[in-house]
Amino acid sequence: MSRRLSIALVSFILVSCSEKDSYDPAHDYFSFANTEQFVTRHIALDLDVDFDEKKLRGSVVLAINALDTAAREIILDTRDLKIASVAFVVADGSSEPATFSMGEYHESKGTPLVIAIPANIDTHSELLVRIDYETSPSASALQWLPAELTAGGKYPMMFSQAQSIHARSFIPLQDTPSIRITYEAKISTPPELLAVMSANNDPLTPRNGEYEFDMPQPIPSYLIAIAVGNLYFAPLGKDTGVYTEPEMLDASVYEFANTQDMLDVAEKQFGPYRWGRYDLLVLPPSFPYGGMENPRLSFLTPSLLAGDRSLVSVVAHELAHSWSGNLVTNATWRDGWLNEGVTSYLESRLMEILYNKDRVDEERVLSYEELLEDFATVPLERQGLAPRFESGSADDVQGTIHYHKGQMFLQYLEKKFGRDRFDAFLFAYFNDFAFQTITTEAFVDYLDKNLLTPNPGIVSRADVEVWMYQPGLPEGAPIPSSKTLNRAAELALAWAIGEATLDDVPVQDWSPQALIHFINSLPGDLSREKLAALDDGLGLSNTGNAEIARTWFIQVAKRRYEPAYPELEAYLHRYGRMRLIASIYGELAANGHDVALANSIFASARGAYHPITNVYIERVLKKAEAGE
Image (cartoon, rainbow, N blue to C red; front, side, top):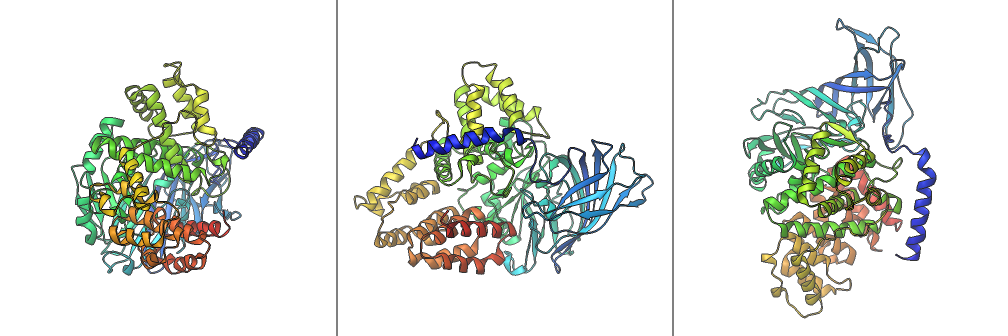
């Protein structure tokens, strides 16, 4: 450890200790909702989808229980919503109007909606609060795509992305993962389009513009999801299928053909799947993530359609969320590793069974390398699995630390206790906390009681707390390795110094992960002639694999290999998935010459990106320009 890092670490520990008393790790600092006084149990939506005005318009009825019957104000989360009226539905079905006010706007959290409970409303009984409202055309959760930006080019599309705190931009509600709700919905659309939600989608639903949904299992608000477009369905198995535009249906069926096998294996490994069907929805390229684990209906990027099923680990990840995240939910966004880190571990276990350990080892190595990159840029105080987290953006917490460090923590436990004992622990964990939320501290208590204490002398609670609260990786962390990737790195160096030719590089026998590692292992001083030979020989600028292209264009931007700039720009216009494009923009802006080019490309491409993506890219460009 360097002296500079040592001093920074001591400072981090002192600050953490001095602030411990004032910081409540169980409190959700990204919600206005007074959940200590009122808790929502169910919501009923009735919404019209207006493509002309790019708005959802209608009402929501929230079924709320009072935890503090003396409290007379309910506070909900909103962002850019136009609230028309608020009323309490009483026993005979009539309405009692309520006064309400909008609080002070907060850049990250939006605006609180404060509802006064009428004097004649008894808070000892369930409260039914009806809110008539409409969304803004710029709602942060919703993307309204014109027909020309869809695969078919004939019909428009709308879809949502509510994680982390964007549900409040299309529903006024308690927008915090600490609250789980059931929901129902009536959705009116143009008659030629189909609506789907994170609920009980019926593959045989007639297309008539009037759709009803029910989600009987309680979920956190960030898992409420909707999409409307020219969508069609194809089965993948008895409990699985895929929705997408007809132009992408055959390719999607081929790419995700093993989804039913994944589901069957997952149930054997982690316990019963408790959500009914498991379907996929393949969206246009502007979808901001690789996938989103909306229950019953995972949303996916079309960048996974590589034609060789090489990127299906994303499906394994989203399916695994059916246990970690969806079934057992992080209580606050500070506890996000319980969602993403556990899921990343489950994903690797599924991929190991369905494919092979060598492939999983490759992906673990690439994840580890990304983790090291994050450690170089993420502040020390954000490097623990459960950092102090009360300000900033809920969408931009720790880079990928909560994914990759969380996965390594569970691999550490598996290695220490053995797979059989650790699997039994996980199975019990998912069962004991099913349909509940959990804090990091509650998890550590459960782990201590059910795994550490019954098996003394293997891992101590103090060992676990180092993972939870300290930066970097603890001593004894399981560092992954891969023979295939080691060989790819050796060949990259040999080729760079002229001791091997491209004919010696067995790309046809490699996985995409091996080629990615080869590209990343090239020396920093590689000549332009060498870069040209590499691009010409391997066709990197025109590859159909979005992950390989991402890796190559990061290097193109970093090294200022200008002959590939036209293809780089086309790539940034083709995809809106943040993982695929953010680092390319960042490297362009940071290479000392192309900040104007990066901003110019973004200005022309942002109209096709999701609002969440635009905010994130703006932040990336600003940091790169500032040299951070």
